Length: 114
Length: 110
Image (cartoon, each protein chain N blue to C red):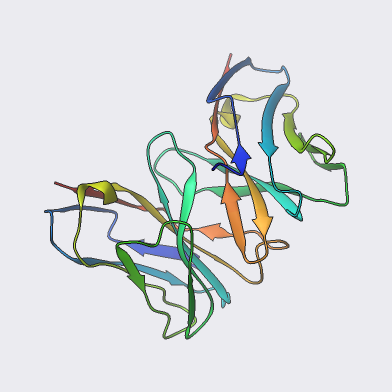
């Protein structure tokens, strides 16, 4: 199993550009999550999904959109990139709710917006 | 407002000694607590967890203690090894989500 994969690993965007961060998991997990980690900060939840077709906002959803059309994939869309979105983005998945199951994380995407 | 706090950004410990990483939380409704470990340029990996109905959970060299009255948990690593050098995140479970602390960077030196 590849686990949780993320593409790209690195990306530089200009202000106002758009991009999609890809996330896929092959563990048949129901739950998927997108986090961002800023320097010296913890992981902040952007969006999450409890199953295909169901998504919900996390702590910092502004400027992002998600969709979950399949169990395996959970892409994160940035429509109009801003310097404040410079961060490392992690995708994670788990079989069940956060309380009882560990989340498996991807290796991250480092995004710089100039 | 930070619901999960790790007030020590860094900790340096000699190899073989005990490492104690601390975490405080504000929400008494959290039902599960987890510790994750993160190496540079990698995603976090799960280390150990504890239910709010317990006060201790042990897994090899790692033990997590929970003091509900103080809203405090700690991770003990005994003995510490150089490979334990990483950033450790405390996280609290709120229904379908985890709320993470800001992390503590542990350095284990020979």
